[in-house]
Length: 103
Image 1 (cartoon, rainbow, N blue to C red):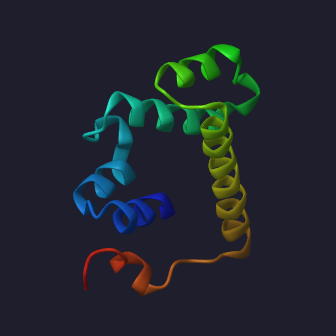
Image 2 (image 1 turned 135 degrees about the horizontal axis):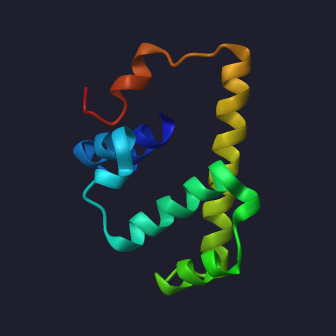
């Protein structure tokens, strides 16, 4: 789960990163953070169903159109890279699992 490692490194909150990695719906997130992740998941699981109401909901949480584009682009990039890694049989090295944990 690359997003969890990135969150650990960037936020310096390993507990939160582990919550997000396990199931973000049960993590200690703000409503804005949860809306961002809900949108990213929708882009991942049913991109054809993204509609203007989804964008309006994101704007209601304070995201600009540029922010929304970036969130969608990052989700799409991780979808592509993770699927390609799966096709290639790539697995993280042992150091990946300790990133951001001060070890």
